[in-house]
Length: 427
Image (cartoon, rainbow, N blue to C red; front, side, top):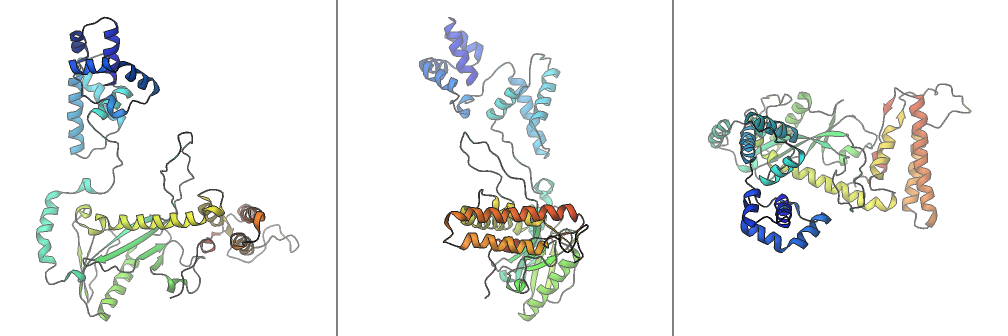
């Protein structure tokens, strides 16, 4: 449409007849007259760059390169039917190859050509995810045919499904509305990850989530904190699900069913950690390989909704505390600062230090900084001095972190998350 508009105006100004313009540009008579009628408005909007993109390519034009475009589109659909990922550079390279094979030497698969090709055929650039591309529909259909026999004799509240997911629990949204004059800057990506196992029944009964972290006894957990949590907590070095953790969870669930005098059916995928087990009150059924995207209920939006609710809750916490910090990410930055503080497992002196010049332990420094931070946040009468107290706490965190990083390179990282978020109230 963009080319047609400019071409119509230029050729008409040069004295060409409407019929000649039709043949040259491959457009209709009505389109030409409409363009000429709104000549001033169209040119003004074009120069301002305010002509909407979807109006620029409203009509699929038939040009001398149309055959190339048709061949490229046919190849595109063939590749996507086989689930091949296609990038812009691949499409452009294939278009050049097709044009060359057809003897068209002046065809150029430029970025502009790709942009128009994508808009003309309503293609989108999406992130490919999930396991749907590996699914054999025949296997899915066969399984669904057997399903009624598998669940026979079990009520809806005794048919369960479980699945794990990874949760980057400190990651902030990567997209945001910004003003036109503002650069879209973001903080560094938080990569702290835990594994969460979720399970529920057809009737909606939700089992206690299983959370797997890296530390067996995180510093943010007080002595009675695990009893207050509404999740079961396990740990290993990589925060992954293992067969040992999974078997322990299965036996705990089976014991619960024994107490409740229930026999249940548990569906799950066949990942390596999901080992088969013979249990008195549970029957385990594995989904066929590579079919969970079609068959597993947890993958049908349950896990995604849990993550969305978690993200919503986390952002609410940030909004509630945003006035106390300079930036929206300062809360997570403070957590990162405390994570970077390196503590020694031993109580020996620092290298090169003496009783007179020995710096305070990291525990003492963190306790001091936390007291200052809480005082600045909770004291209503300090007025203009609030910023000074906050800056003092941040400086203490930074200074102590630098001292310990330089002098203890092989110690254990510890986190003080509980210092920044409220504890769970006892029930």
